[in-house]
Image (cartoon, rainbow, N blue to C red):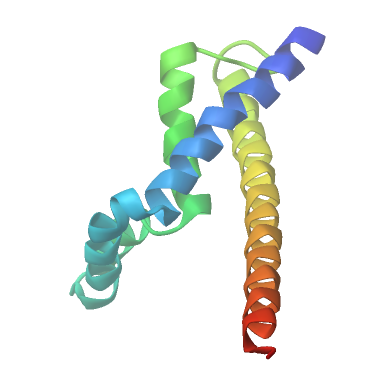
Amino acid sequence: MSQSVSVLFLLAIPIACISWTVTHEEVFKEIRDFCIKNSHQQKTLAARKFFYLFTCEYCFSHYITILMLIITHYTLVFDGWRGYLISGFSLVWIANIYMSLFRLLRLDIKEEDLNTKQKEQKQKDLP
């Protein structure tokens, strides 16, 4: 059981990484902007929701988790479909905790950078 829990926390790392990168980082900005536009402008509900999936890290993490479960065959607590179900929701939950912590860390770093730039500017403004 302890090995299964360790694997849970390890598998959630790439899920969080992929989900965050696709939904937030600059490398996918053009694709994300296209998806955002289409999630608002498509005529059918299904099309709007399809494009929205690529803009929300929480939603996208479910699909990355499904892919990860297919690749790894990881189950938690039970064998079979019940183990996949429990491990899937557990992985999504842990991955989203990782992404929330990463978001907080980035906010702290941005705030620190802003404070440093303001201090530098004040020093330049002094005679």
